[in-house]
Amino acid sequence: MTLEFVNAEKRIHDSLIFPSFNLTVNKGQVVAVYSSVNVREQLIHLLLGKTLLSHGEIRLDENPKQPNSAGFLFLHHGLYERLSIAEMLQFTKRLHSSKTSADDILRLVQLDGKRSVKINQLSFSEKKRVQLACLLIQDPAIFVLEEPDQNMDLESKRIFLSILQHLREAGKVVFILTGNLESAVTSADTVFQLDDNGLRSIQMKADEDEETADSTGTLASTQPVRFEKIPTKVNEKIVLFNPPEIDYIESNEGQTFLHIKGESFPCVFTLTELEERLLPFGFFRCHRSYIVNLQKVREVVTWTRNSYSLVLEDISKSTIPLSKSKMVELKEMLGLK
Image (cartoon, rainbow, N blue to C red):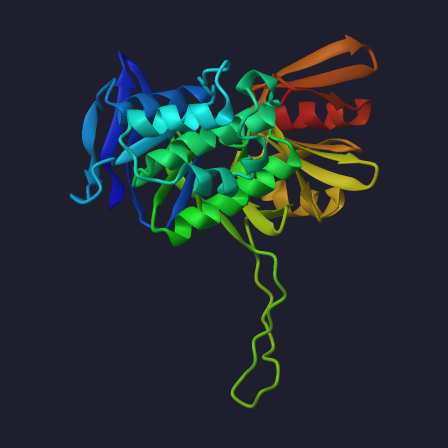
């Protein structure tokens, strides 16, 4: 079983939602696509067959012995809250003619001790685990998960990650759609970003200390390499961002953060180091605590004779300070008097 997007493109009237892209998710893989709400909803509608691609196709290479090809976990749970957990699972099992053991699923989501509890008495995170249990009992070959761990407590996130490992080992196809990059990186083996610029891979690697030895057993010397990407750390993984993706950079209490599409990511470099690395990419040290991507600046706002701000064209229309001395420098860069 595989899930495959072949030259997939979607337009609505004259608006491009995403340009043509190719992506294959094989069995035993967990792949996440990081995108806006609009792109995510369009992908879900396409997979449900509610809408059609403008160009290309979506292929499900089905196993004839497993007719339940795709199952969905939506952002909103849609559970019958007057039922108990056990009753909800039995209802789902009958609805999908499943042979999967409800007891096994309850143990997998670690709710076997609450099987008789009504769903309306559960916490939000427990309801999400019941929703996941209902999908598991369907036993589809392809799992499509929309924001699967959004607002979950830490215990439920841990359980969710263990379930993903179970699905890998069972040879399932897992396709995660999310607007939270940290969630994508934490959950998936491979992460892509999809927007109107197309599909591109987000590079990441495990944060492990690895040493390379030569044929004599001694450590091989490494040559200095100039990296254009900027590394950040998300849990135990390092994520590499292209400079143009960064909206601005902030230093707060000795820690540097990259701000990208409304999210912030810690970085090991200081502002001074980042200023030097990013200067060729159009970044500007606008304040002692801020570096801004000038390509993302929409407005320069004058509050008083000595107070200025930059308004960005990012998701949240961020406003960041511009010091008086940097205002003079910025005017010179822009050719203004």
